[in-house]
Amino acid sequence: MAEFAGVSVSDISASASGQQHFVAAACFDPGQLRLRLPDSVEIRFDLKTAQVLRLSAVALLFVTGESKSGNEDKNSFSRALKFEFGTENESRDFCSAVEKCRHGSLENGTVIVHKSKFDDKIEPTSAKMYFHYYGQLLHQQNMLQDYVRTGTYYAAVVENRIDFNGRVVVDVGAGSGILSLFAAQAGAKHVYAVEASEMAEYARKLIDGNPSLRERITVVKGKVEEIDLPEKADILISEPMGTLLVNERMLESYVIARDRFLASNGKMFPSIGRIHMAPFSDEYLYVEIANKPVVDAFDPRLLVSPPTFHTLNFTNMKEEELYEIDIPLNYTATVGTRVHGLACWFDVLFDGSSVQRWLSTAPGSPTTHWYQLRCVLSQPLYVMAGQEITGRLLLVAHSAQSYTIYLTMSVKMWGPGAEQGGILQTSTGKLDLKEPYYRLSQPQPYAWAQDQQQPQQQISSLDLSPQIQDAVDPALMQQSSPNSTAL
Image 1 (cartoon, rainbow, N blue to C red):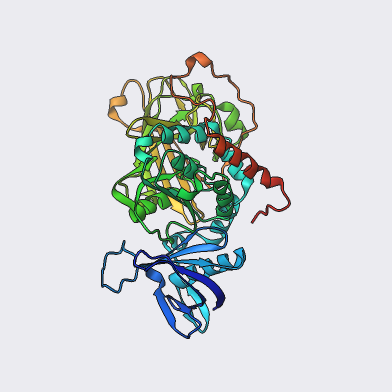
Image 2: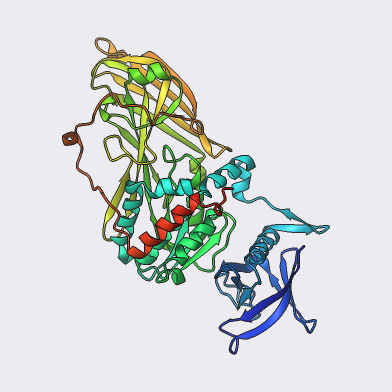
């Protein structure tokens, strides 16, 4: 293992009589950090009970849970050391060495890393591509410029300052750090912005551009399944939603973060997600493509019946419940037509103490970067007005961070003799949510009349503080800079 020589160490523990400064060499043994002082004295720390937080590009806070008094409280810490390195690369290498030794072991000088829960579920190639994608500023810009998404999050936070003021917040999958800035602006005592991709470095730059907020935000690079934090959170905030709500399987990480970091009486923003579904008829789409999930924005008048929804309660559901989601379908057709598949969208609830906010991706609502999803059947179903449509939507998680969709839709007999039961037609589809057909540039066959939209809360612009706005714009401009690198 590498040895880090000439590390400047300051003991800033509350128990220390004033700050003690010394220079040491940092070495690693299996599960341990050794500090070797010039007088040949060595201090050992158990990495399993230690936390490492970044203070700046070259400074780290190392907090150890070891207690000579025998206190077994896992949330108590007896030593706090500030490490200062000569270069930013040396600081990063030290963090990497800590993580490797914390989660693995040394055999013949080689680190053998034990797999985390994330690694057990997800293919390495899929994870690499996923973190590569979200490590690029271009894709963060796409999400930031979704005013429905970003504006609703901002409103949900600032309108519920009572939930954030003086509280500890964990931002799960922080990305650019914008939600962390919102939380700090709402008065959070401290925010831990957890981000596993290289976007963590951009988040630090963005946060550093806000002098009034940066002292209360700590960026933690790593997966929520693997990192440790020095205290429990009062609030979890995250944007874990993918296409059809569940794509990319980040909801599982959100639930894991709840179990690991959230206090027993803590709140989650968002707290509930709903998958909405309804049969649709679209001859244009069916001629274009069949037996495929399609991402686009469509006219809600294409729906054949009122929608139903399936609820996921993030505050109490088990992670394993997201491995397989089985949703029964039952509708009554309002028109006589051909049914070409099942249309789906989602919304999430921010259940604040002062204001409740829904973020909706419904057809007819302002379009978001999620759009909607339509599962197109292999064969259409013929229905009459008043006829019952039944079926099943089964979502089965797979290791490529997505789901296989098994869709079955059937039309029951209608008219005289219908009470005898029986199925008249059935159509099925097996679709991969990982590989949808993106139809975003296609013209829509109908225009949605403004007076037909249902009343809802809408946010036409972002009321960001000048400090946040000034920091966001330059950070995004870096994407075209030769110094900004894509992974």
